[in-house]
Image (cartoon, rainbow, N blue to C red):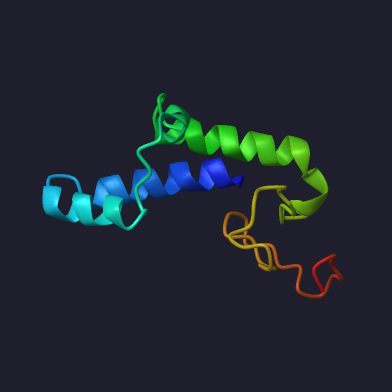
Length: 102
C-alpha cells in the first residue's frame, strides 16, 4: 500500500474502534493515529469495501510480479494461504508437486 492508503486504512480502523468514545478518539488523534487530512478521508468516501478493492486493483496493475495467488491445480479456486497445498473446496492435495514457493 502507498503511505496515503496506509493512513486511510489506519483512519478507518481507529475511527471504528473509537466510535462513540470522544475521549479515546481525541487521544488517537493527538498521537497521530487518526489523520484528519481531507486527502485521507477521500480514499474512504465510497466506503471501506470500495477502498479495499481500489487498493487491490492498483497493486495488481502496478506490481503484478510481486503478487502470488495460490490457486488449486485441480479446480483453480484460491487456496486459503499462499503456502497451502490442499484445496479447501475440492480437497485436492498437491503436497507432492514442486511449486514456486518451495
